[in-house]
Image 1 (cartoon, rainbow, N blue to C red):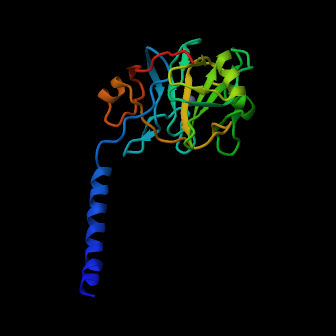
Image 2: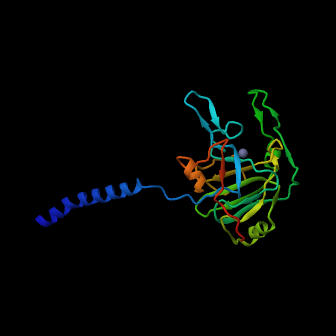
Image 3: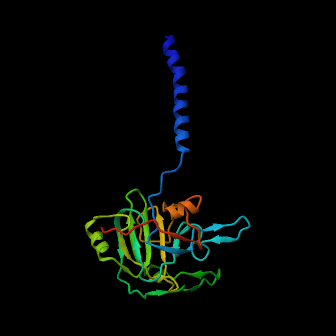
Length: 233
Ligand SMILES: [Zn+2]
């Protein structure tokens, strides 16, 4: 009877020790990011994560990446026809590569009540893109491509895996880009042919990004040396 009672008193102490150890483990350095920049070489970041300064001034992602949808998206200033590499391994979820490379445009007009510029939904969706399913509930969107690599279009049919560093296509300006070539990249919480949707916070593990940022999040206006490398799928 007494030993039974002692056991019952010891249990909470053991549980507390376990939770403390688990908590300390959780405070250790985060696991290295599986993402690398979606290109080879060095290119500037046109728009970074949407951020507002304490005084209310928008300091990053202000042009088109507002809070909510696209909040954690990046626009990389890739010139036309630069190879776009998979930032992370997965499987091809969606592909659209049939628009001509010069199929690009601007905003549709102004909302008469708010005066805000309105995205033409038709043109907004008339972009070439690849979406890679990471098979963990997230997917990466590579948007505004000039063309999709034929091997990726084939993998969209076969379901064959895509390795990090595989060429997904070539960068361009298709869709709502004001015809300025760039790569819009975002990680989404689901596979969805819709980029006016929530984006997920994420980090890059490229050594140059890790060395020069506190969180592994590239800064708008900066250029980083990609740690990604082209591989053949
Ligand atoms: Zn963008």
